[in-house]
Length: 372
Image (cartoon, rainbow, N blue to C red):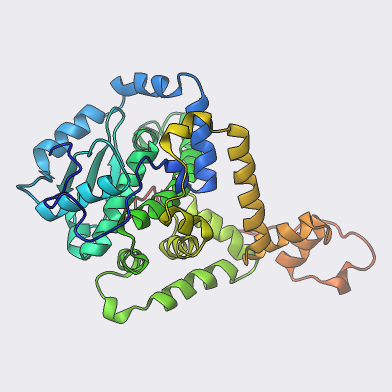
């Protein structure tokens, strides 16, 4: 693997717009961006994390992939090597990270590493996706590298494994899992950011949609439909009652990635925004301006995004929160009525004794890493 951006023809295989000096802020999800800006502003934050490298299995992982996987180069998986160089060329990532193909039937990809990122894709993913779909996935992983996500993902993987090892220690697992849960919440938002980077690298929204559909339903495109797939995301968001809203939260907590239909809907929505069009027109934040980024402004933008999300959400719980924020009624009363089926008729005569609660199935599944 060389560090050159040049593909065999010196340019991407088809004409795509390039983004010289682009900052990861251009495509980062507001929640992801505010968290990263705050972390980067903390003096010595990355230094402290890198000081943990003696505990983290990075060297072991690098040796493992080098010895038991296939390193992508001009001599091995040359078509993937071209895609990797193209993605780095388009997103202006200065150094092309090493990429490995690992034998695993499960479609997956990841970007990890403390000092330098490395990208790993599984044979299941390579066999599942066509060229344009694969470009979006590799661009997704290059986006992780450009955003500096690899450091935090490596720590998440380490802490997840550590939590399993200390599960027998009283309270030890609780403390670690609290950190893991917070990191997972951030990482799910970072996946939405990387999906956007994948679209900027591939510049083919249909290929991005197809790739996500295949990750969800396998290599049966003739049996699937993008519009119907996106309709699932809409149905998922607005269906059910408050109990379903709670179950959605419980279902997503152990996951490192958002649900696939949700990712597809989020990416399609972003591709239709003025923000995306401005980037394609060459108007985007530059890397050399990152040092002047305001933490306060980033948090304000994130807060504004969440406020808009709540206001426009079709989810029953989010709609209720929006109603409460708008002064539409009493939270306790609305929750009681929603969960018990009570209405205005049995609300007469003042407050009732007791409180309503629900019991949901305990999520016994462990952490799962989804494809790309």
